[in-house]
Length: 190
Image (cartoon, one colour):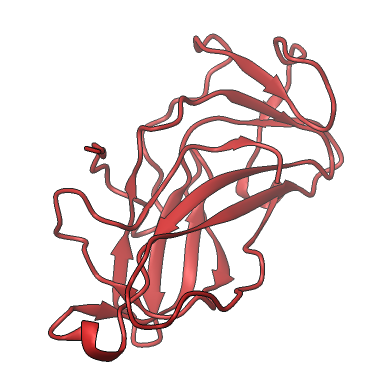
């Protein structure tokens, strides 16, 4: 199976990707928290970084620890504000080590973007697919990154949120044509 990826710059300095969020944008609109699909209410604003909280579920142990197999985790964004707001597109995602080394994740085009209206307390997620570092006899010569932080920049924002990365070291493939670690567009729900 051949998978193509878009190599777009993530937010290395807190800058955002080109703006894609306008009320006139084409594409489906999804309202979260049990609401129906449709257009957002007139005047529904874009979610700013200050409106959102980001999280990752707790890491679980899995696999035999010798062969690196792709894993997936939902990067969650929750509306902490007191009013509805919208998100649309990709979050910027950067992994950072304790020494400041960084890796900007590429964006996967496998899921189509939809505008998501987040009611207060409602959430959206992006799927982060990652390739854990091999250990044991399969680890020979692989370049490894041991991140401690995942830096997330909501779509069209210039400031970021940080969450601890507790899922261990990764096989570093930031120069690969088809890396095993990448992030998807935001989708409704946690």
